[in-house]
Amino acid sequence: MGAARVRGLTYFLPSLAIAEVQVLRPETGVLLDELASHPHVIVGRLGATEAAAVERLLEATSTFDVLAAWVAQACRQRGWPALSADPGRLRRVDPTLDIDLL
Image (cartoon, rainbow, N blue to C red; front, side, top):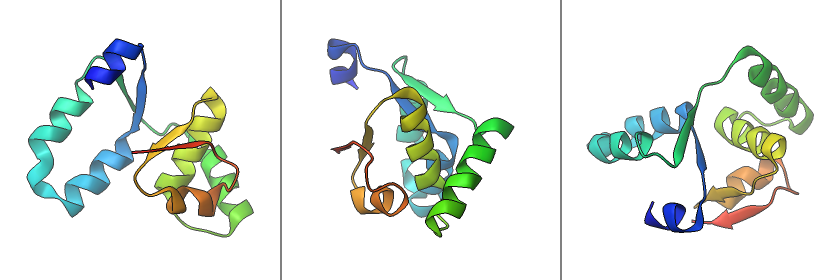
């Protein structure tokens, strides 16, 4: 997160991503808490408007990856690139999404 401070970047972290990591890697709880409380990280909650946009994107792509669709939708809305270690997951939802590899 030091790079975010130096470069003046803000990261959007969907709350669903936190939940997914907690289920898959419960030992990372302390690190996730530290990440979520970092001043350059915005933890996003999926509201009704965003949920409807995500649902439309999922219907259009015939996939069911809510997190990937949420990330794609949030990036589209903000004009930000996605940051991902698994770009294929995002490409299945939006092949045109600008993705920076983690």
